[in-house]
Image (cartoon, rainbow, N blue to C red; front, side, top):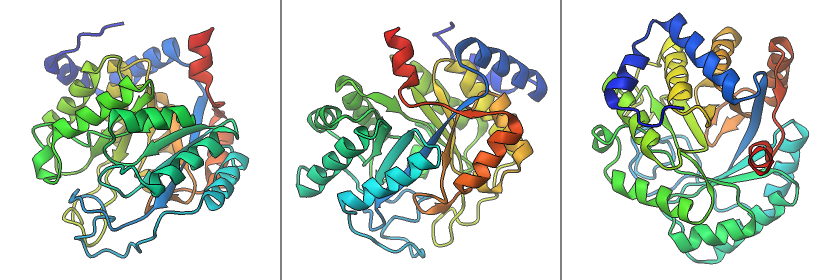
Length: 323
């Protein structure tokens, strides 16, 4: 496995003729993963809106006038029920998202730890995305049974200041490092369609490829423009760009779970099939991805049936490592 990718290597790969690129990515996927097995994840917004950050794509930022209604932190029992519903719908992983800049050591964090413990007892992988965390906070999450922590890079370091000014790229990398030191698996990816250049997409993948170990999970999101945000008028990315990005990610990070994330609602089944062929092996299912619309569970299960896909069980990667 190549582990010393340069920007030029990744650029050459990204610019490969599309069908050839898909073929290469598919070959890598077969070598490192069970083809036809796709993890179904569910994302629960446990605290919505009112975020002090200024991420240009996000309708949860308090400074933007969007239709997102602010909701305080959910109760543990409500989250347990949503997790149970997700499991019944075929999900093996639950991600808890809170619109916080950073985790604070208070009763809200204690409640999140209780949520993690409860979902872990349902034999589901638990992932959290709560903003910046210290190493000590990450260890508390790990002790509660957290499996993964999500903290996306979003874009390249060069383009970052055009998207967010309230925290730095170094802040992002520091949080990922804290998560890794706590023994958690890392989930980190980004968004295409922010107005970035191809070089920015390559730069983001290059940074992710340098992490040691590489992230166990890389979500690739297509921007869903939301009225009231600075990026409300962005043109949605064509499916071909999504397929190209997924294929490149798969080859550069062969062991990682490549997550086909936001933007699926506007994709045809044929487009999603190409993404799976190119190496995507995880989706988020359920009617919402935090605050943006998403296909429903039953639609996805119908797609799985037609394409001959099966849901990946929880902790499969961990078991494979232990064996």
